[in-house]
Image (spheres, rainbow, N blue to C red):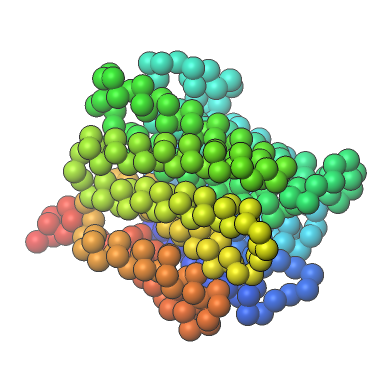
Length: 368
């Protein structure tokens, strides 16, 4: 990825985090800055990087450019509640995503059922399908809630479905991780890999349905299954993936994913407890969200953006330590204390800029 794209995406990601705090300290009555914060990271940045990576080109295609511009229009129109614009743009975004998916794979996701197909490719296509489906589902929710009122449910809100745009980033990050496990595809471990794929992809869908219907006990069972699948991924990845720099970052990312599963289970249990007070468990929810959005997803996106550059010149353990400190300590505390919010913005900016712009070791050696 060229430097202009890295600058663009890093600015959007840092801006997204800033907006994640602005709405807390400077709330607006009519507009949700939190919604814009989610869009800029998940849809505008994450979605564009996903499509760019899928096409595998050095130069950005017109399709990806149109998607990026459309995603910005989508983000700001949804933020400003200009829903007719949002719905019209969502049609364009859906077509663009499906165009790239079908060209890369096929119209029907038949490779999901092909035992000879790599699990990495299955996660990759699932990521694209999740993105296009998420765009459609969000538009249907807008139509229902704002115009038709066919279904009335407490959890059937735009913000609930907009959070679903983080799922494509999780799936493409898993695709990257499994691409480093192709050497064991022909072994008995392939069965475990397939089980992980189906558990994670179907589990996320089923979990989302249980959230809508507010079924807490089934949520715990599904989350526990997802937790076991992620632990299995961690085992396979740590044991069989080649010891390269990318592995260290993705291992840290899978660690974030395990952390989000644990905090998710804990949060559901708290919701089920007598006298549940949302304000008292707010800190746990924010730990869960920040670990997922700015922990796990950032690891995947940074590896994608620098995929052809590794090894890069940086002290990986130090960067990973600062990343964990920022995502699970500073950022959640920043929700309650302004000083920690500022510290987390600086910490996250350091991590993002370091991961995106650290020099390539091979280029350094070539100049010496």
